[in-house]
Length: 346
Ligand SMILES: C[S@@+](CC[C@H](N)C(=O)[O-])C[C@H]1O[C@@H](n2cnc3c(N)ncnc32)[C@H](O)[C@@H]1O
Image (cartoon, rainbow, N blue to C red; front, side):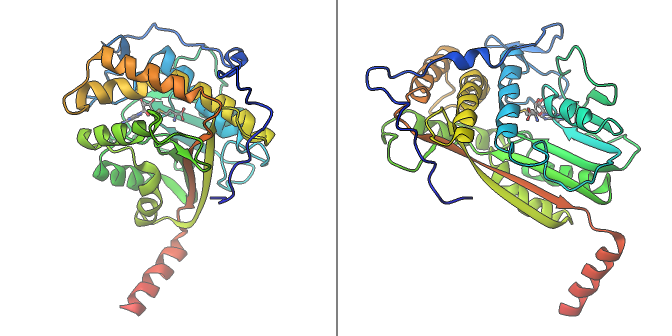
């Protein structure tokens, strides 16, 4: 990660106007529809396909957060030729897969970018889209089940899949990815980690924002599906047999406090990501695994309201850490070379 601090915009903060202008609200629109059933709990809808619960709702509010997360990832790659992914798949990939596609934003954009490719997105809940490019296929399935796609993929992508799977399930997923990629095909994953960071001491140590990372990570640990994908993915991808591993680390500013225009825009969108996503990120985890005993819905709502207040405080120069990894499945001759080298050493 760039160790430099993100420079603060000195003009944004006005002492008598502690809240942000809220014109970002017009930037993101919810297009969700609620024709699908799922399971209702604490006023939120959850997927009901998998016997195991997934910790985040599948409803309009959460899809709005996914959309903001998608935009955030694009803004921070806006200076590159392809803001959707880094894997060098060339100009003519044929088969691309997005695991846990959410609202399908990434899969749809990639299908638009490569009209000759078939881009599949798979999720436990039907993505609420009314139109998609003809070369995009959104499917409802559990990625942990045996994969039935016949074509080997050129690229398999995952984004914000943290807390989806247990440690051994992650190994299974990476192995499935490896087995279902062409030789020379790429895996790419982008993940963030919950704790709120601040480089300049502007976030008071008693801000409730400091509790959010430890609380949710502790609950996810108790649930057996940790919020640590960002920290474990690189090594697990290596262990699955991938080579040519690249890593890019990010700071995702929360709020438009940065002076740099790209960070400022990212921060505006990230603020919306947090405001729309926070209730869903907290509700299941804290009502099931909150301590010292599971929280009530009302306790979670009060907690989230307090988090929201501090997230919107322009004096707090906060950000979240994120990381992107992309790696290649070796060609057969590389595999034998790696094998011979290993034997030579032993
Ligand atoms: C936090 S969302 C991220 C969505 C999307 N990747 C994005 O970046 O906008 C994680 C998604 O993974 C899906 N998911 C979790 N476990 C899954 C599984 N076993 N099979 C398929 N999808 C799964 C969830 O339903 C959810 O939509």
